[in-house]
Length: 406
Image (cartoon, rainbow, N blue to C red):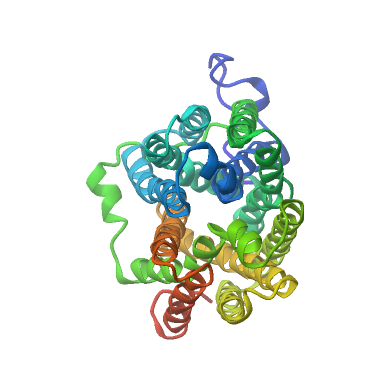
């Protein structure tokens, strides 16, 4: 049963709250979030798909472009908690529209970036609204479908992200090869604008937490259980950032695939993530603990296979698809768990999940860039990520973060 608030009282200006947003159908509410998630996945996942063209266009090196990917993830790490705490009193509709507008502006700025140094700064700014959008959307989506289907609500938003990995990210790689990486980011800006319009049309008024001080919001970030969950997410999710950031050169330079083959492989990776999103939603609604364990153990097994046989051609593709599927299962269970832990502000909990996920991307892609710069090759990031995944598995089984989850 939906838990959305009733329609807004009369007298609210139409430009602020159109009639379509006053008593929207849950599917309409979710449509804007799915498109917004699609755009976010394009700008984040597509960064690794356009590396090869950026190297030539910006006259730079793989490790420098890797740092721009790290800069985006660092923006998410900083932006998610700071925005959600600092703007806690804002209504969720207002916050989503403001962050959606910022996403469009920074996407346009990425398109215009003249140098790799300016791209570093712009990508950091582009990451700021990421967690606030997805975290707030997860909370409003949960209200739209009802708390009893919270796992399904998160999965629905994740469909936008995973569909982007099937058609969007490969499409960005194709556009980058055909007409340049800047055109690919022009598409990102367009998708962001469509998502913004849909959120304006269908997102209802959902109250923030008025009267809550900055100190009061920060106080919700205390507690051993909360930080144990965050640490588990941070360690467990590093594999995606470490591997995905350098997936295109891994496939082309190490495995000998051509650019057209890589486009298909990126789509297959997206299929794996979509399957993981579907399975993860069902598993999370049934048992967040089981979903977390299945996801993390699968991530570790995929990373081990990549480290050992990541130069073996098509078997490498199978390992990548498996990694995408299992990381999605773990991601959705972790988001749900954090929303439960920060129960007084579930949208903050969901945003913190994205902050932790991207903190691990900072670690994974950053260490990957360093190892590649040292000449250790494109398989080295998988080994670093495996260490993190194994540590996360230990915390999952013996730590306090998921102990009382059932």
